[in-house]
Length: 188
Image (tube, rainbow, N blue to C red; front, side, top):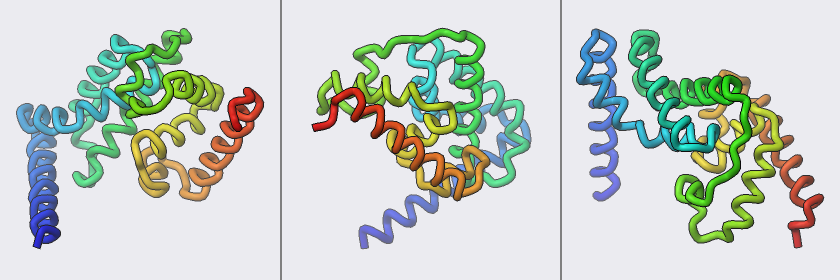
């Protein structure tokens, strides 16, 4: 019985999103704001994973809101709204990084955004440093898979890559991480 209730609630939520997207595409500002607020924390968290500071992450959120508002009419399938917003977030974050061309050290309060509170902070910092050694595609896939929990198929859709490329790139990234981890003499 509980499963049926969960399915009905989820179905209602999907219908609400569909309805709000259609309204937003017709120019309804309030509908767009409701949609954006639903995913604002996810957008901020993803932006922070890339730009590594609150100020730039907030700028990314603002840019994403602007771009999404201007381009909401290009969203063909309302069910993929979150995926669409995350793709805009990644692109915008990478643009900010390229524009700033600066390296920002990991802050201790970063842990709360990636959910590693119960792990050793030194290990968390080390993992983040290792992730920074990856190229942008590899880093994006590691973040989407292990920090955000996306499936291979969802990652392929977000990054507009073939499924096989996503798998190959992610496994190559994991191999690099393992190698760097072992070279740093951090493995037991």
